[in-house]
Image 1: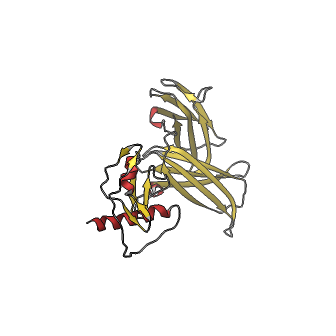
Image 2: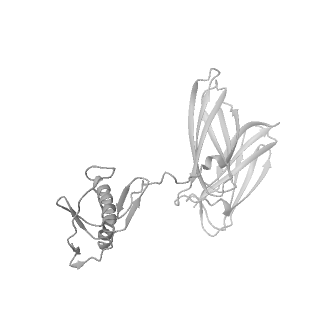
Image 3: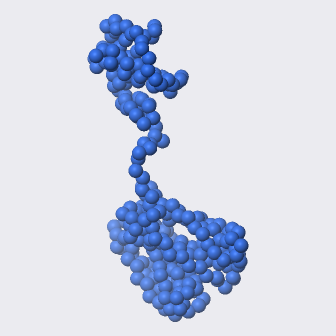
Length: 280
């Protein structure tokens, strides 16, 4: 039984020392010596589970018993054949770790139109169909009739709640655009970026060629950067877009407060969609 444990210790100590020197794999027959070796840490004898031994003039100690004696966690990573003493590195991940591709849980609508300066606007409506609040990053490329990339834009929304949509707009100054391509990535939002959309009650009414936007913070905390973005249609075709911030001089909509703003366009419209973003 001693030899069995000793061979285990040889393996572990070889792996541990390989971090500093070299690595070796395989098996070999060896002669080891037990000599009732004691381990004393800071004046206190360690009660070990596996007895130390001597091999080829070197004393081998049980790494788990030594690590725990000095107050360190000891972990074995069988996937990478590595012993960790103390904190494990943040970059250490298991190859079997299941990850979620949240981009597959998004739905995307897309439109484009030309403004009065003949610039091209590309608009995406991105809906979060996952159960998490997501940070969404988009990369859009514009191409000419030959498939050449003649424009590229990126956009980010830091906190999109589950079931909510955002409108992301991109301005291209070329009038030769024929097609658009995009890629989208999504991940869970960081703790520092929290959505406050659920606290914002929004009422929108059409008035001639504008929208009257009324935002009320029905929550208990201020909401920052409350933004309402709208995309306008006529006869089913996108014709313009616009946005407004429903905030005070401190870029906030205080709890219980209401702010009324408007979004104007130059043409008459018969339909629209809108989205609200707000953060803590």
